[in-house]
Length: 412
Image (cartoon, rainbow, N blue to C red):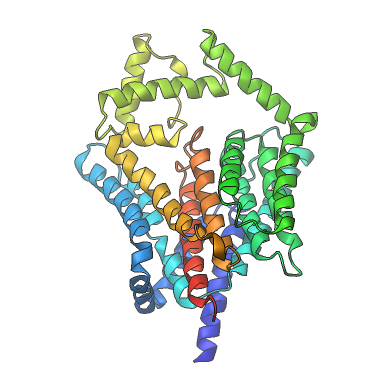
């Protein structure tokens, strides 16, 4: 019996490690991890259901949020003409990512397997885009995926490394999370992704709010030094940060000065203008995106919008995308998948007197992931791709499971 338990724990630990480790350096890593958690959970389904029931009070709102998101997509498929079955892929796979939570609750892998996967994934990703940027002279490298998505996920791994540094601060391996943090930041910077800068601001606000968790002077110095290093990249011409800032300012001033909207920022601003017009016409339930595109084409023909909006696959803002395609109801479904996990982790971070317990590092990681994704969605639809959606759901459910395990074993 002991061998079976040990084998299951090792298997779960391997899956937990491979998920973040493979997410940036492969096309298939996140999807394979998703299916692997699902298949593995089938073998422990009875124990998994029991574990969910034991922790139902803590989990119910998060599970309800992902279920709500799926049911809304299902209703749109049923009630709207022209909506394809493929529209269910992301919400359904995000919902079934709770199997990762089940596996963690039953098999209880060491939480350090996640930390090593995060650090290894951030380092491998930085080496990949570093080679593309410096060796192949690519201006906007993105590994094997879109540069923006790569940069956002790389930064997310870097932010989670802050929590790893907090958890491992008294061990001989305390240096490695610092490597993960720097690698995640470097990978994001080399992609030229400006949306990540907003995530750094949001992460700083979270760290200030819950500074009682960062009671380690070493970790505080690491965070401050890392953020200062990011700011210093503005003054290194070869990294392109200065040029991206100047370009962004020029795009905004040009757009509002009546210039061309055919710039990176100008296209976003024109899309957001179109989104507001669409939301005003269909505020409750929104319209499918093909109908929205046809409406925008009519407005372009009438001179109300610039033609730059027509080739765009989405609104370049998660909240506006949800409002356009789902109205207030769809927006609520999307927002709940961020708000419910945020509240779950915030409740664990609240007690100041117990800030030295292991679940606080895991909860901090969860809050940084949620805050990061919210920030990414201000200038991009990070949930547009299956990879981006699954990374979020799997990371949230893994961290929730590890948090509950840490609370259960606390003091034993």
